[in-house]
Length: 163
Image (cartoon, rainbow, N blue to C red):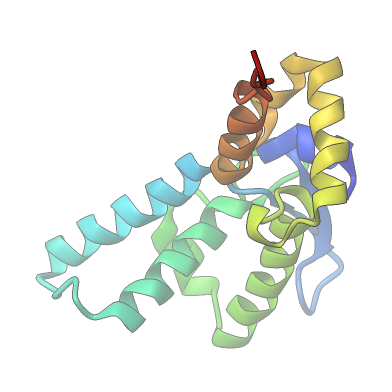
């Protein structure tokens, strides 16, 4: 785990070539806000079209596409496409799969899932946060932040024994 990538949070950007071209685009780490935006926009789109939100497979695909729309940026971090419609018209099935794989791997590298983070890596991060508490504000994983808070807040209590 690269502690510096973790501390950058959603400011992490990875350069990648747009498939079939020499053009470089960037994949950014998504924050919880980005993901919630994708869910909200999906629900609004479904409501506008009169589509049942219970169609889980189609809804998940739309959320995934919207997340890609939010994560593909230029070198300055500005979205590459002005609107989702324009982006989705350029997106083929193969391109979506390729970018999803890249984005998910980058997301895991920069904002690891706490459920799969080894204790050794968590302890390295914990020591870093204790030294530089201001660095925690950039961590984009709420589950990781929650574990850090709980770990820092819970202090061992020495119980008295005997008389």
